[in-house]
Amino acid sequence: MSAPLKVAFDSSALGARYRHHGIQVYARNLLESLRAAAPRHGMEIRPFISTAQRCDDGTFAETPGFRPRTTPLLKFDRLWRYGGAAAAAYRDGADILLNPNGASLPVSFLLPIVTTIHDLTPMVLPCYPRRIAMLLRFLLTRSAKASAAIITVSEHSRQDIVRICGVPESKVHVVYEGYDRRLFHDTRPEPAAHRALLARLGISRPYILHHGAIQPRKNLARLIAAYRLILSRSKLDFDLVLAGPLAWQFDEIVAAARNPGDGRGKVVLTGSLSDHDLSLLLRGAALEVVPSLYEGFCLPLVEAMACGVATIAANCSSLPEVSGGVLRYFDPGSVEEIAKCMQEVLERAELRSELAERGRARAQQFSWQQCAEETLAVLEQVARTGRIRTQAVGVAL
Image (cartoon, rainbow, N blue to C red; front, side, top):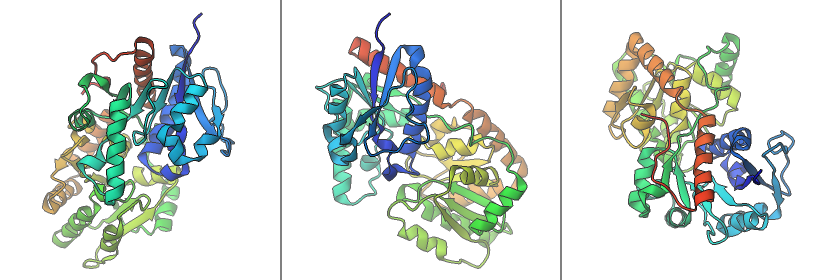
């Protein structure tokens, strides 16, 4: 019997700095699913743990095909991201390194590295201070060129990576993300628990929801303006709930939310929520709106659809691809178009039901188990052949 293929897993994306961000959700769920799938593929997953890290929740408990490795280097963020991860994997005898965070410097002469690049926001839609944006552009470009293979989360991101980073199409593999089916499902929320949550958050009406980190790319200032426009020209009476942590450059959004408008309805900023509270809030929403200017995949979109919530989205980047074209779409640069789309859905119960059913069916095509299986296929291809065959792995559209 041949020895298992030893796959080091860069677990830095599980750190506190990424809490409530999509990259941590991706890394956490992928690692959990790799743990279950790897033994069937003759692989051994080796996630790194800091010597200072607590593991009381069982996340890093050793099981067959899953052998966590302890290293002091993980405590030093820059050292780890700029070569420390590859050095630790090489010293530990790993055959290959899987890095779920593309913003790092892979030291590829030590061992093959497979990197997940979720999107190219710093190049396509920079919304960071200039120095940070320049650093991120350098790291992403270098990571794309130096990695043995790149995993990305949509065909749209694949095209961006090939075009902007100048890498061969055959090097970039599309592996769609999944969603947590234990949290995001279409079971109606328990009424008493839902009422208690709404009272705690200050939500006093049926509500329109957006969930995700508060940052410029999410286009929430226009969403607030569209919401106020609806209230001004209709009899609709809803609150607008923006659920998620304040990430960066959020001052304009917070100011817009505080503006009382004409006194009807209100904008509620919930801040970070527990997984349980987010699930409860989402399953009770009248409408989910995703007005993002740019997304690599957009987990909140899939989570809303999985919960059977009528969902509408921007007509740009990966959103039509991931949603399979089954939703209503709008130009995210037009407040009027956002408002018109929202109003139409809110005023037509049959349309809301149709969107909910179509979204729910589409969401069933995504799972973390499938994501893990396809990720392992890319790893095996790189480690055993040393070259990349042309393919696009993912859910059939």
